[in-house]
Length: 221
Image: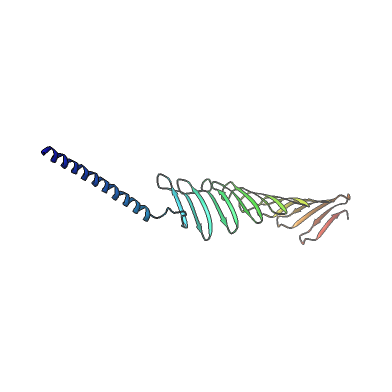
């Protein structure tokens, strides 16, 4: 009889333990389902005027942002100096490479007027620029960023070469078009002094100008 009571007590305790486990599992499942129901959905976009990406040392290396309605992406070196930038400024998209401060740069821009390539040895050093428009292409060589010293142009009807002094005044100009070629020499004041023309008709001419821009000598007369 005692054994029977003990067996019944053991069965009741085992049943109670099973119910407690079941209750814990039901409560956990309810808590998980409640958290999932109230959890905010993952964001599909980030809205911010600027994003900065840092390296392991906390230094900003990439900046992505919009300022004055002009989007731009910039890569920086460890000292914070811009190395490369891509920007859209009023319809002109530009890519610029800036290896170090005052160490030269290269840039490529594209607008409705066509592409433009610029290379410069330093901020005030020699530069090269090339551009292409709908009806003309050009190449400019400069002794400094502020002065052009040689220019080449070409379009559908003519080609030209211009050599300038350091003040960007033309000294020598050469052009060729259908049927004729022209050479011009100017003085240091930028005024034309000598002009030469040659045509297919075998008619050629040479003209010299005085300080008042008037012809003072010509051949043939």
